[in-house]
Image (cartoon, rainbow, N blue to C red; front, top):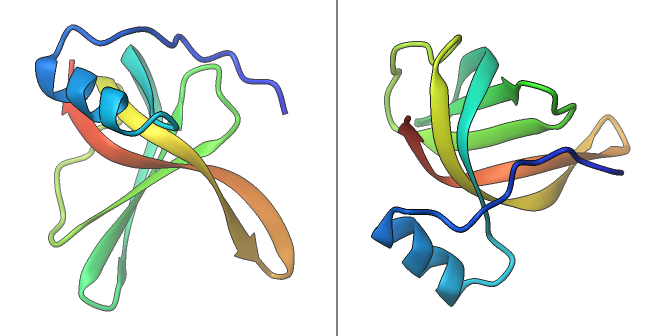
Length: 101
């Protein structure tokens, strides 16, 4: 699957350090959130983002609900992963760091 990611080397020292330590991580700056869904699963809140011009879901977990990021621009650090839903392997991106731009 081809992606139109705006990958770059982050200005943020923390994000840069993460990428240097883990070569599978990717960083994208200033990308617009089109959809933000939060749902509870056990003690966690699963957050799913859809980003502008990207057809892959971005997911991360938090302990509590947050305000919606819909319409915001964010800086994210993530890695590709697969999730099995109803017997189908779906490509997703797991977010390890997210900040409002």
